[in-house]
Length: 362
Image (cartoon, helix red, strand yellow):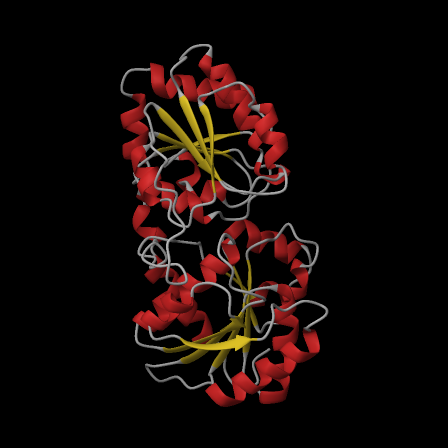
């Protein structure tokens, strides 16, 4: 039975908690912030990363033996059930599809309400998150998409992602994964993304090369890893001003040392890195897809361009560095409405969703 006192007991469940995963980052941020607000919070997943960070914030951990997948589903189901019975939460909050399906069964068995969260709406399995009594999305665009794909409108609650105030930059599983030998040389363009087609990195590389025809001393720093790394490095081959920096748990010092952040995604529900780039005070250029316009105040806090348009991107980059006052103006614009992007606001809004659910709710 859901209790409506000041303090709630919440258990978050995720397929895993490995770093370099946006869904995991959002879940960890939420759990730590809810604990900081004084709620009793637990996190149930495989014991990968973030263990010490959760401990520091007083989050109880229930470690599954292995990440949740089709081969571990039955064992994971039993472990989640035991964790819920032991912790006695008011709410189960599931963050990935497989964990949501298992939590649905646990919710039915224990009569603890279930909330699910959709971040990757491009997944064909995303509509399965309808098993939650409420379905939280990371932005309005994802909410609209989930409603179109069959999740009842009355269950969907959009809460825009935010990272300001995150504790993740302090410790990642007790250690920082940061390459200290990387030095950002200005003028600098920076991006951080997975190295796979959805992120549109070839468009950025091609746009950068075009922009270099006008500003030959530009530098591009690419943070991230993925299956297409060799392909993208080949595309940039011979250009010593395109630097692949690998994966780093802490981006903040590198963002603060750059001038412009670019995200050339072809699809991207509500990327946390946009929030991080805005907090760092960078001028931002990003594609107008999914939740990116909402994160950029619909063009007031960053320049929006069409996806798959390296020519448009190149033009905006040249404008920022060649037009007098443009770079500083767009850096200032990045702060418009930035107060919306705090982790605390996300945590408080999420608690509000939990409190909506009464015993026997739909």
